[in-house]
Image (cartoon, rainbow, N blue to C red; front, side, top):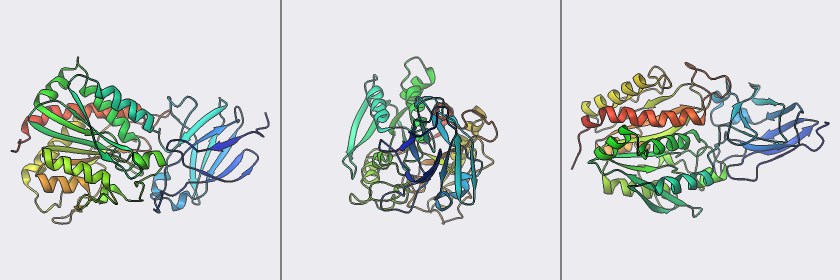
Length: 379
C-alpha cells in the first residue's frame, strides 16, 4: 500500500483535532482549544486508509497545552474497535508530541484517554435507572440543552454524593462511575446491599455533558471551568453546578467524592479540604481514615504522591471539595486517576485503562463500606 487515501477526521462525539499539513504518511496536527477558553489537551480523532502503513502523527501545539508536564512519559491510546484501547509509541520534545502507529485495520481511533461517549452515558443512565430501587431525576438543562442526570440509590440515613467529569476530558472519571454504579446495583453483592441499607447515594455520572460532546478538556459550553464555580454558580455561566448544588443543599451531605483525572502524576490519589475556614479535626480524621483504608484495599491507589496541602484558611472555596466540606461539615475529597499509568504497578499494553478505573470505582465503595458507620449523620 502507498497510503495515498489516508485521512484524519474528528467530526463526532468528543472529537478534537485539526489537520495542518501532510507529507506522505506523516501528519502535522493541532489540538483545538475549548470553546471560549485557552484550555486544550484532549484529542480524539479517526485515522482511516492506513492499514499496514507506518504513520507519524505530530501534535504540533502540544507545548502550549494546559499541562505540558502531562506529555512526559505519556503514550497515546489507540483502538480499532473502540472497545480495547492500547497504548502506542509516543514521544515528546521541542513542544511536539509525536505518535507512531502502523494500523492493523482500515480504521483506528486515537485519543488522549479512552473516550466515554454521550451515547454510552445515556446507555449507562438507562441501564442503571431501571435497576430495582434506583430513582432517576433530570436536575435541569445545560447551556447546549442537554440533560443533567441524577441517580439516587439506597434508602439509608447516611447521605453520600458521588459526581464526576466536571472536567470533560477526564473521561476515566465516567469509567470509574460505571464501575461504581455496576457494583452498587449488583443484587448479589453483599457489600452493595449493606451500603444501600445504610446510605442514600446521589450520583451525577457526568457533570459536564456539553464539554464532553464538544471535545473539551476542562470547560463547559461557555468556556467555564466548573470546578471554580462552587462559591456562586449561575444559570448563565455554570448551570451544571447551580442545579447540583441546589439539590445538595436540599439533601445535605455526609460524604462526597469528586472524581477526576490528572495529566502529570502517574498514580491515583485523593486531595482533601485542608485549609477550609470551618475545618475540624474529626473531619480530617475521617478523611485520612478513608484514604488509608482505600490504600490498604488496592495497589492501584497510594498516599505518597499527590497535590500540595493548602495552609490554614487558604483553601479555595470555589472548588467543590473545599466548598462542600466547609458548607456541610462533611467528609469530602477529590479522587485523581492518571492519564498515563500507575507507575507503581505499570501495564505496558494498556497503561491506566477504563477497566482499572472501573475497578477502582468498586474499591472506593468497598472502602466507604468499611468506614461508613463512623461518619456522623447530621439532621
